[in-house]
Length: 547
Image 1 (cartoon, one colour):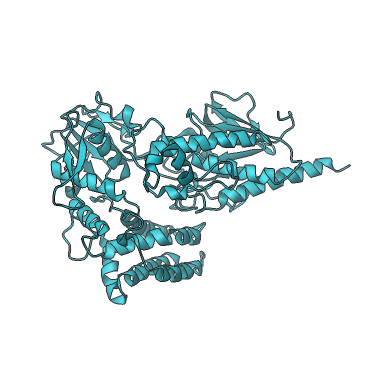
Image 2 (cartoon, rainbow, N blue to C red):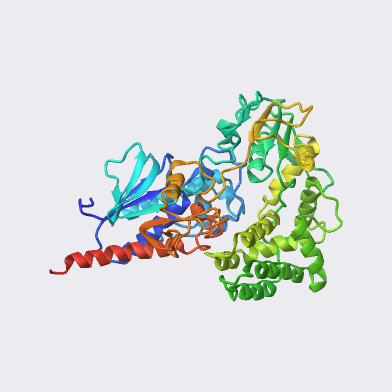
């Protein structure tokens, strides 16, 4: 048991980022024999620490991970195996599956959390608390954490905010919906939000959003309602959608961009391979960029497009690459969501030659670690940042779309009429109040737009309090909190708010690319663990010195 004078830490959030942070802290504390025993409180309203909302164990197995499961390697603490080794014994039927079910990832993360608890028991007392953090305020040299329900002891020597996805945001339809048409305010968890009693068989549903959460909804309302996807005879790579009895009649996705995400080629296939020398040379050039350069955005995008052109054969491809990035469609090609998706699937299957969209997607995904490094903490102007973000949205559509098998299912839904892209192509959709295009016969609307990263647009109490009281700062035009290299919060003057750290989505735009299970993409967690362990040791030594 930790003694009453033990250092106390609060971890707000119990998703994968919190898990990785505690594993890193365990490693640091284990390396310091004689260190004082910690009392650690993990604050999260969920019931299963380690999983977060995205990896609920109860979700159906047709909802898949969107990145290769190989990124879930063994923790530095060595308290648990990596996912590829774990799945061999726990779910051998999924061994070698590149994109396993998210529910299985949740089981893995839950087991990894339990292993962490057992290992931490040697050096710390860890207490999970089912509560929602409402505020974090300075209290002398400590931080006070206000929760609902209240904590017995609410002052901590260290606070780490790792809250992941927000709950409510300024753009959610539920805030202003006043239509008589029923609204389903979210997609996840699908068993609750898209139940048969909420989305009736044979209904016609508009879906706000056309990205990955829309695809989750489409799968839940087809495969989850008894549909099957079977190979089309004589058409390699094509699936047929055999409709189930409980399906809605039609889903109509909508989005401001009017386009779907491109399919990702499967790892190990020719469409996934790129010239390693071209990528390595581009990585070096990106590493040489200066984050203080006022032309950083232009230089970075110039490197991305030039590298994509090299992957296509040389400088002569550069004009088409530039045009594709600018317009989001191949030069001269007929715009349309179905056409773009079908083209990307054909390229991934090897039925078409790769083009500019493929090259930009592979370039962006391979160079993403270097991009996140050069942009970290960049102080570029809001105008430059907005231009970079516009380009990044297109690049991410080419790079980070659904796995090929999921994209093939979506095409099968389009072919069967289960998904109707007419509203997407026309650029129409429901207003925030629920007004629909005239002459629309719609039974319900589903909001498949998730809360954005960062803090600025969130309506949850904790991010609002941190911003309104000036405890954290956000650069103009950005969304997330400014933090130092160890995650320590920075105020508007750049001053460190010692012993308060933020990691993950709350810092997006200052630190780039947090929607990942890859613990190697960012260094804040390791730096935070090193700083916390070293600070505790220094304070212990100070107290041990004679007056």
